[in-house]
Length: 495
Image 1 (cartoon, rainbow, N blue to C red):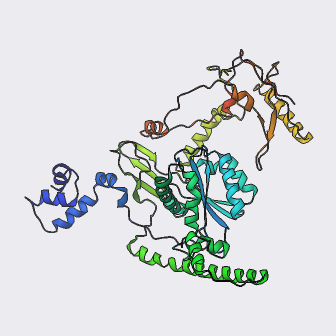
Image 2 (cartoon, helix red, strand yellow; image 1 turned 60 degrees about the vertical axis):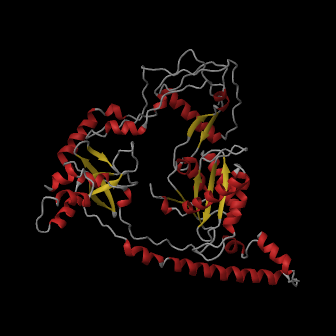
Image 3 (cartoon, rainbow, N blue to C red; image 1 turned 30 degrees about the horizontal axis):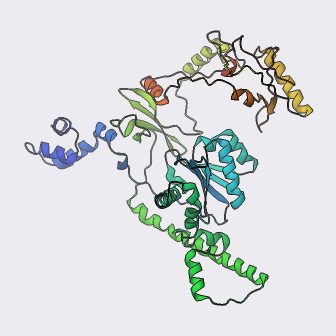
């Protein structure tokens, strides 16, 4: 009767509606508790439940940063309305010690734009010891990572789908609200009023420190229009002091401000006790069945939770292998640097090893060449592009010659005669082998743009979600395995 009243009569509406449908005609001892337990354990209701149903977890204390500008949190805001200068993004930065904010307008989120913005931030704050960013591709790209590693900056990544771990997100809300109000008053050019918004953030008292960010950085409050008006009204004559006394007074004032700020931040941590009163610390044991919040929902009718999944104990982080009766097994969450235990028996491992050895030619480090397709390079004009070779050291020249000879042996390139010449350069990355590259920038400007349909990633994942096993192929240097059309001009690599 509970099943009928909850699933048919009440259509999974909840505990109160199920009771109303059932108790009109039936009653038995302890029926209220049994109905509540039955509805709470309904699999469909749990998976369709709201994401807000998840209980709060206890707060994790963040260590207090005592050295100003030693740790900086960085993030990106946008896209915003395009300004007259062509910028539509903001690269924001916040010092975790003084809460001093900064924002740099950029045109796009390419790695080069990110690095230029970071250099502007570092020119004002100095190079930090630690930098925290999210998992955005602009911050995790090889170029940005190499730039930060060159300066010995430790990079910390925020958790996926958890922006609360990066305090700069809170500053975003305040900054966007200020820009929204000022744009309503002064016009849509937010880049023009950005300094005014940053000045406001730097001269107001921060809740966690009890001081303004400017006071902790400069040792004094910045002069605001209100303070200038006050000075003009009072017009008290101030005695001039020597530079030495001023410096010592400034140092003492900054030291006292920093001590009080640290004390205030420690006091703010006491709020954790009040927050944790309504929190529930959940611990998972191996074999527990759990539900996972769906990170993306293709349609409005998609469920908020997926699963159930079975947990595996791995460094106190649940690794989930979700099993759905209608869709089979599927991955619910991807954890970095997580080693999953092999579930294959010794006989199965031997069978897999024999299978790999039998098809060993498929796992070669030497790229093949397909005869199913050829790549055409269409040019907007037939005028040859002639580029001069770059100067290189004798060591780099020898490395390039060795790489070119290796590609000749693999039949990846061939000797030819062409009026088009593009310089060859050697890209050297620490920890990796030198890689030859061709500077095709001039040729790319006259290359006719070709458009290819790109499949939707979510649709591809949905197509294979019903499979129990999927095969993933990774071609060895796949861009070398597609030949060029013979009728198109080929570039000569000058050495």
